[in-house]
Length: 473
Image (cartoon, rainbow, N blue to C red; front, top):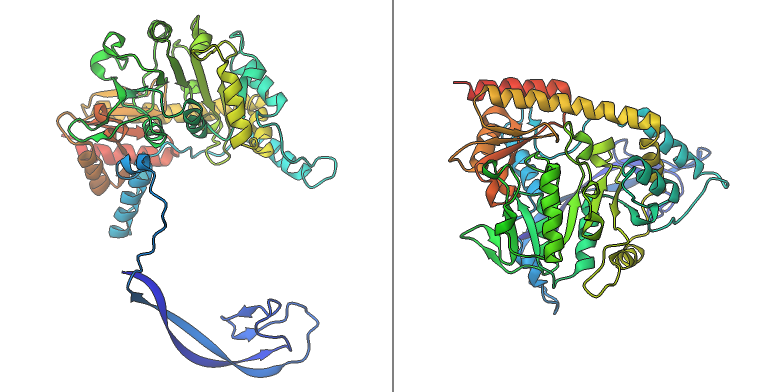
């Protein structure tokens, strides 16, 4: 049944009306005051009329089964349940409805909370205001991004790594670029992902038809290579046991585990890709959070230009989760099996599917990479790093095996022998804290939760107190 028809109950009230047709859009109706007011201040005469006040009450009707002749995309039908983070939001909202007086703290989705620094917002404001002038107005920009921003990314992020501005494509975010890369590669390639990993890699692979069905006995999709990354192997896969795949998705520092691959490990990964003729899609979204000397970019590894694409994002760098700005690097030397440059096809994808990132967002991105903006941005990052330290210390003090937190704003906490969603539910119900169940990132995440350090300091400290109250022995 669905609510479609209405039963209407009427009453009447008087109002004074200017001589304007009630059906006219020029007769605004302010029900609260019971009067029809003329939009023009000069109206001085009117007549009293009876206006019918209508209250509509929805009535259930039989749902009509109306279908088209268009079949559902079979790949979409393979997807399991909902995407992880909307499901968490659904459970959070249900908890709030059940406990309306509870103050819920989110350590769940990795969304930034601190204001964007003024040097960056000022640049966006200036750009926005310039659009109201003949001299400053601009429409469509280059699909690849504005030249000054591409040059600044090359200089600030990839200095001494031989990345050219023409190899950088500015976009509306790394997540969107993952989908564009899937369109680039098509349904006939084979893929491997870290397990656990950011769910967008797997879900987009399913959507474009790179996988078989979902295997419930192992909680994996057929035809995807799951590279197990656990404490037992220092969160880096045993590449000798990984079967050859065309595309290897690799995130470092990793979401959700917070682990960053060492130089030696990335050298192994690049060598593995070269030996197998594979392409690495390297997600560097959290590189700015790194505290040790692990590589910030895959291009720090010799030979990576021949086998790797890198995505980057301003979301966690500058709090641009709502502004939307990122980039992808596709080196000239990266070639398909027939020798055709990958960059040429990616350029075609961008030109066909994208009209360029917002010019206001790009002005903000350029300000991020200035001396003043970079300093201000890193101060916010340091704030989140301190939040991370508080959470790491909290879980360790309670005796939990705790990972991450050094090179990423995520803490990966082990609950041996327990179901991740059960732990999620316990923490939500008893402490009113939202976390992320590890199994949502892949089967190797079972028995873990992820805690995000994005939050104001007061909430992080309160969460620490509640966790201690809940789990202290």
